[in-house]
Amino acid sequence: MIGELRKILARILFCDEDDIDNVLLHIPVGVVIVLLYLVSGWLALIFGYGFIKYETIERKTLRDKCFPDIQGCLWGIGISGIILLIVR
Image 1 (cartoon, rainbow, N blue to C red):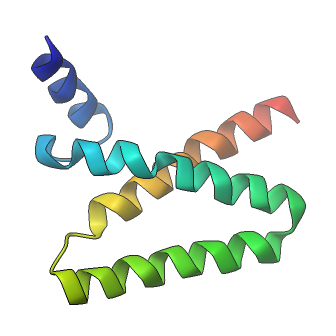
Image 2 (tube, one colour; image 1 turned 180 degrees about the horizontal axis):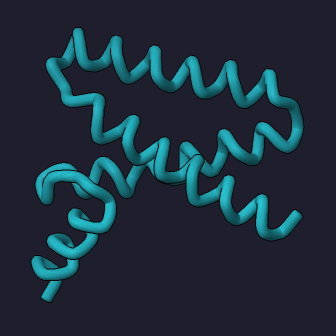
């Protein structure tokens, strides 16, 4: 049952089934970026840039895949941004 749910989520989020954990884990980072945008656009830009820079450095040093992490962040920004547009 959980394996089937992972496959469905991987299809919905356009990622590999192996990367679904990283994508889901980083969606809250995107939500935080949207919340920071409500405070100040500059804060959101600085935090977003710092996150992407951190992930790319982590990729170089740990030979880690940073793209699912960034993809999860973008999903969080997209979902939160749509909710924000609806609520406002």
